Amino acid sequence: MANQVETKLTEELLPLLRKEHYVTIATVDHENGSPNVNAISWVYAQDETTIRFSVDNRSRIVENIRKQPLVTLTLIGAGSTYSITGETNILSEKMEDVPLKLALLEIKVAEVRDVMFYGARITQEPKYEKTYDKDAAQKLDNQVMSAMKKA
Image 1 (tube, rainbow, N blue to C red):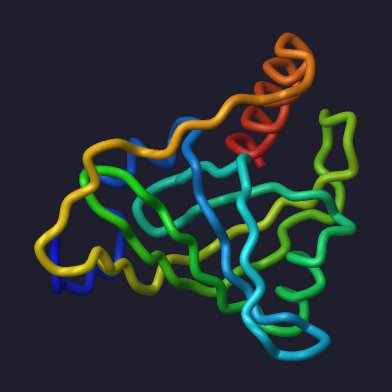
Image 2 (cartoon, one colour):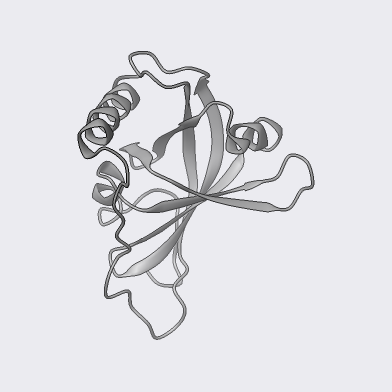
């Protein structure tokens, strides 16, 4: 996919966004207009043109999107680094069946770019571990993912 611009998620990327995967989101800061980048964990691709994600409803991400709905997700996987850009809508300020105050947002994919620098390939994807109660983390992850899928 190098040097190509796609208008939807590819067959390689879709499964990566249907399981827990390290992703960052870039928004435009609502106060000063600078880029604002955050790592997010609750991300799910509904299909090749729609990506849902969930964050605390008091998050700066939500405030930024209210003012400027264009966002970029960065995904490292499938041997490369991808930039996924689109317009975001806030579907819900508070997700049902989830104990935390989480907002549900949805990105309509406009552009997918392979942004890996020339002559290189990712040989190992980023890994992380949850540092709080593993059972509680798994239960919450299941609740959030289920709510995102059915919304």
